[in-house]
Image (cartoon, rainbow, N blue to C red; front, top):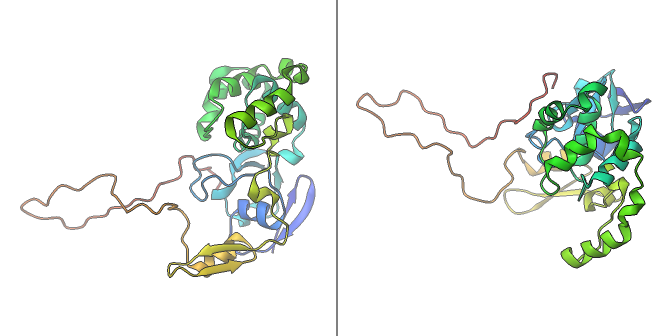
Length: 261
């Protein structure tokens, strides 16, 4: 078992070889930490704090959290203020990436939160695919003013109607979306839901959690595509002496590897 503090409460999870993200989502029901690219550590959607410092949970083995304090947006002081600022600035659209972004920005010292260059540097560890960066930077540098603004003046009801017209489906529009409460399918799965993965022979492997299903299916996480393998760099033909040894890989290294991961 691995024991640690989660948002101020002691928890125990099985040492099943999984990541901190696996433990948070599958074992402890923390849905704010999102799985956008695991285990490649590229998108930052699963960022949480470990002992007060931001960590990408999908590249952090759960064993690294033993005896330490893990904090998610559920345990973040002034999480509602951050959410209100993001909503007022239009810095959250689908809300998938913003819990991790908020955790990263909230870890900055207060004086650095007001400096655009510092905020932009922190955001290098994150990807946002729908909102755009300027509004996110503004939501941080002007957070105090935005959090006190009348978010209701933006008329969320009209925003919901527009979203339905543009996207064809209902969309939640309020401050809680920035904290990851947008209603994603995997977040709404029952606590006892099983996880199914296709094995190489086409059969289904079913486990109680992602780690178990992955193991039963014989999957090695990292490459999520059915496209044929293509090499990023083709090796030139061997010279007169030939090649002593060659190595080609399509593995994508983590774009942002936490130093303590």
